[in-house]
Length: 126
Image 1 (cartoon, helix red, strand yellow):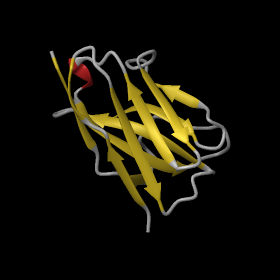
Image 2: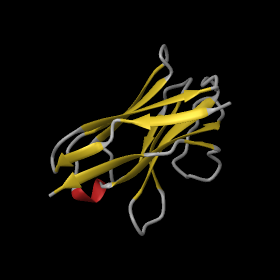
Image 3: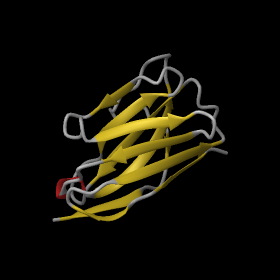
Image 4: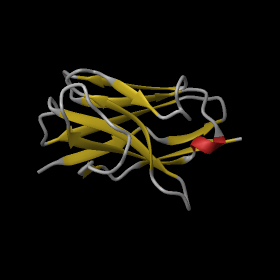
């Protein structure tokens, strides 16, 4: 059984940092792309960043490029999202998701991702 679990969310002041973590048990992550998505109240879920697990190739949404960094620990099968210079508009529920993907490929389009976690809340105060 596949289980995706996020952690690391919390309340932080604008300009601060948080690091989110994600584990995906029940999957052999080589051959998968993993992504971070977020959903603010009243808004659609949007892609933030993704990484191809085998190749390490990354992609970022324009809104977070230069502030967020996605990374993976292949030994411990853990995905991270380092979030720096946080803004109030980054406030959202953050989700981790996984999808089978060709080598080197990932997408921040939520369509196709078939394994999702329950999310971790990030709140940035002004």
